[in-house]
Amino acid sequence: MIKKILITLSLLYLVAIWLAYLVQYLPVYIPIYVPSYISVLSAITFLMYAWDKRQAKQSTHKKVNRTPEKTLQLLSLFGGWPGALIAQQWLRHKSQKRRFIVALWLCIVVNVVGILSLFFW
Image (tube, rainbow, N blue to C red; front, side, top):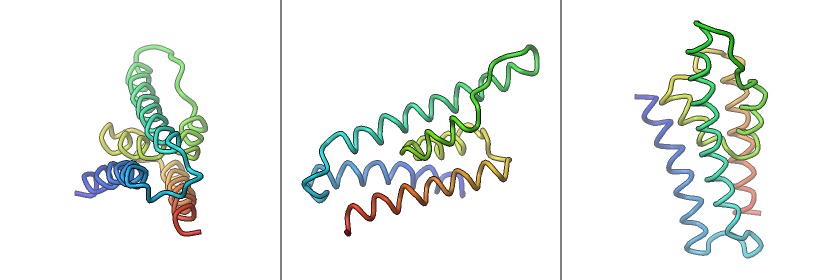
C-alpha cells in the first residue's frame, strides 16, 4: 500500500510540474528546461538504480563495479528524487538501509521546499 502511494506521489509531482508549466502557473523566469530537467534527471536516476540493482545481483557470483551510494544521493538531491523513489519502491533497491532512506527523504524535502518557494515567493 505504501509502495503504491509513494510511486503515485512521485508521478503526480512530475505531472504537477509539467501542468504548472503548461498552464503558465510557473513564474515567467522559469523556462521549459526546469520541468524537462527534472523529468530527464528522474529517468536517469531510475536507470542508475536499476543498473545498481542489476550489479548487486551479479555481485554474488563475481566482482562487479557498483554505483556509489553518494552518486545515487547526489542525483536525488539535484532533482532526480522522483525517479529514485520510484526505483526504490518498484525495484526494492536501497529500501532497507536506514541511513540511505533518511538521506533520500532529506533530498526530497529540500527539492519540494525549493520548488514550492519558486511558486510562492
